[in-house]
Length: 409
Image (cartoon, rainbow, N blue to C red):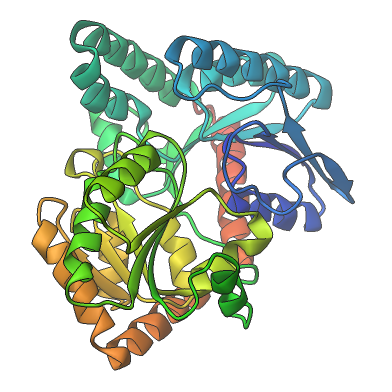
């Protein structure tokens, strides 16, 4: 089968899926947006061919203007044109697309349809819900109108796709809400690459490189956007300043959230908060391994449409986790049910700080949570089982269509 996987953000786990499918004899093209300022998977900074797998980093040849809404949209649509050209040129039978803005996704779906390919919407977030929750706070009238437009796009895309892959069963509420066919909706939770994010002996070298040797690190890695409250990380640093003098809160990110932390920590005289830019992918496992505790945060209003997938990498790294994430979110459920760490509601700032202090004070609990998390990852993140499930999704749609099933829902 000729398969094209579009992963807008260039994350490691979709590339792992592409590799696994290519080793099964499928001819796979893997696209990603090379200009995004994120940790890229392996050789994702460029393009390469390896047997049945071709990886293509699509670049506009200019920096991505994430925080300029008008210019950002222009660049996103330029990316869509490049990706559409790839679909037309490659002639895939199946297109699996994840992470792109909805206008981009809609254009890719149209290109797939024109090429006679099945289009599968791999829904990493409910994007329209995010816009409807967050944008009206910044642009009250325009935000509401744009939110309705985004819901129209996402609902139409979901209805007209050959199938949908949800990352959590919580998204199944869309079946009734949007009038979708349940048979076309599949739940495959995200994962992280076990082999590349594994404990090793280079963690202390990474800490020393950044002047963090001798410190117990509470590390946050990932974006700090509208669905995150960076103030929680300030509260944590303030809480630890008087109780754990050897603890250092380390934030690996970029953008306005980091600017805010730098400004506020300087104003408050906090010497136990360090900010670093995104690290090279080869440094990523060493960075996680250097942490005593790994951190994730998510606002309550974002829980219905988002799952912080960074937690899955944390599990692979065999480090205890502290979350400020709604307790009914999939990430919190995994961490709590498998005793891989502690979680507090985002509104419970004191609880978040207390959880981190509790783990710092209990080395045995640290070891137990770390072991539990890694065990969960090893049992759950088997890429061969995951590839089986995606193959079944593609094959299931063919069987249903042969029986007269309407892909329009």
